[in-house]
Amino acid sequence: MTYTSIEICAGAGGQALGLEMAGFNHLALVEYEKDYCDCLKTNRPLWNVKCMDVRLFDGKSFRNKIDLLSGGVPCPPFSIAGKQLGADDERDLFPQMLRLVDEIQPRVVMIENVRGFMGKQFENYRMAILNRLNILGYNIHIQLLNASDYGVPQLRPRAIIIGIRTDIFDLFSFPRPKPTMSKSVGEALFDLMSANGWKGAKKWREIANKVAPTLVGGSKKHGGPDLGPTRARQAWAEMGIDGRGIANEAPTEDFEGMPRLTPKMMARLQGFPDNWHFCNRKTTACRMIGNAFPPPVAKEIGIKIKQVLDYASTDSRSTKEVSRRIIV
Image (cartoon, rainbow, N blue to C red; front, side, top):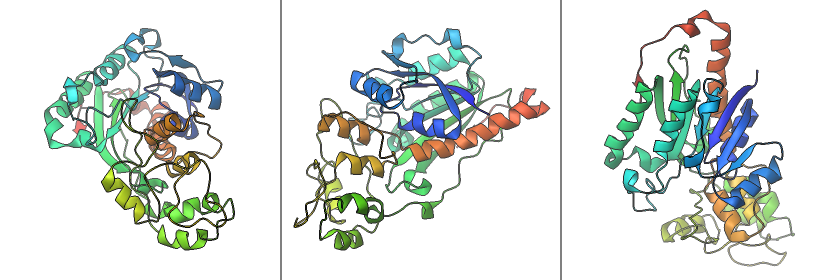
């Protein structure tokens, strides 16, 4: 069965693509930045992309018509790379997600954010959000998932909140880790690194024998086409990659030294298919890719959500309200 969904803060489409693979039909995707909207429309012309501020998106017309409301609300309020202002950050859109949950009353809610959201300094704010979802009528599951456990060659921990409406029998569980699914960076990128006949590609593949550190995208104000601050660059250097910038193409035949990743290589490390087109401007493309949610992870979570909805559609117990709870 195919289920309906709405996604806010859709970005470059990583989460939406993964949920589509899991069997969800997006009735609307809300995204504020034009470059990201263009990216979504280019890759999926039939998606209903709402290029607007989510604060202006009214969910009342979708009330009780949507199976899944999802969104990767902006991470800067909780990211270790930012000032960690939490609720005091103007970019915090958790209140808008809660508003839309109240207006739409979807059967399932999925919210994604960075690992910092799970930090002790945000415990009161985090519990306020979870309690509010509980009051709105949802059983809550929250867990930290790492992308490298689900086929993505990258260490990318993300906090995932799942809300199951209490009139649905709640059998949700997070997908089990499958770390053996993920290739090393060398295995994942060897064909792209050797595309121009680079003689050192095989030796480089042996050096790049583990999963990548977390890709970073930066913001409009901060971050360029590179692989992050000094500590991150050191981790990349251990795999024979120069993180000080991003290349336009793979190394040439006689290239010597440490190669740089191309945007296409970055996208593959995020789990995007090679034919997913990003902005032609390198800085913008790298920001899109670095800020994305890996599609394979979204797919695995989406499959588990779909199992709940499949069961609810066939079992009479789905109509009985169960006790509200928060599972951490």
